[in-house]
Image (tube, rainbow, N blue to C red; front, side, top):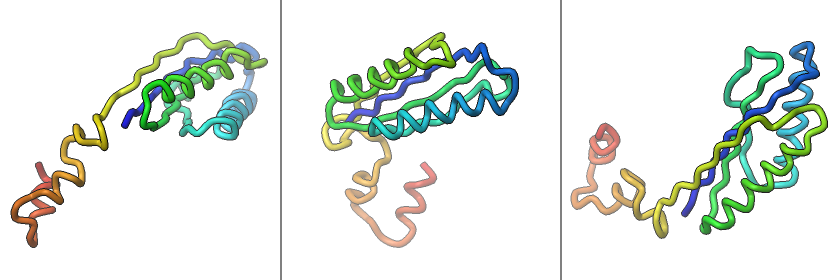
Length: 126
């Protein structure tokens, strides 16, 4: 399993009000969600009228697919009519086959030798 994340920094030079800024950000988020299998949210710079940071996340069983989807989201940001893509940071994190390298995953709880009352609560506190 692979998790791909991207942070897109947008400059919105024409935004003179929060309403104009929101229109540009919402339009981009809605367009990306409609065309790509991703989660997308504004993740920072909410106080600045002319800046927006957008987070995009995707989960896939192939890192190439994560990269392809994130690249498509970046391409959509590059052609925004009302914003300029100022910076892009992407990362693809592998979690091993079937999530085996996930720490404290449900698999670990289910494989506990003594899975009796209180075991799950003790495991969650670790």
